[in-house]
Image 1 (cartoon, rainbow, N blue to C red):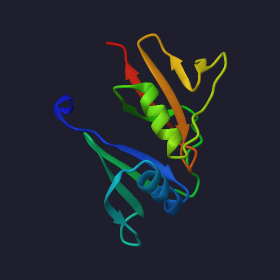
Image 2: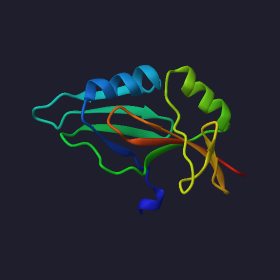
Image 3: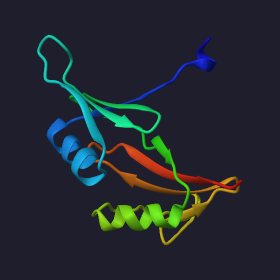
Image 4: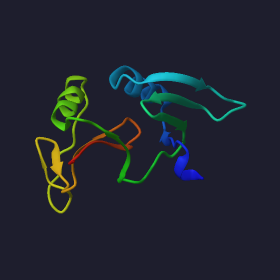
Length: 130
């Protein structure tokens, strides 16, 4: 059953105002709904091409440093250039992490680049190698 169902990502946000600015104003995602509380957990729902991204208010955020969400892009270098033009800092990594060159790592099966949101969620853009 689940193989035929859409899925969405939920990220934790310690500061919904900062997250709203980052995802809406910087990344350009459309806001579908905001639930301010108190009857519903405070959250912001953004539209993505194939689903939803939900930012849920959290007092502690995430302590995980692994990639929390990734966008599949047709051109990794163009995506990195666009993010940088929007003021997004692209992470640089050295061994033993995947080594980046101008922000992009060759993962063997894809190219990838990472950036961090205001609540320390690790996000990525990925270009599969066809």
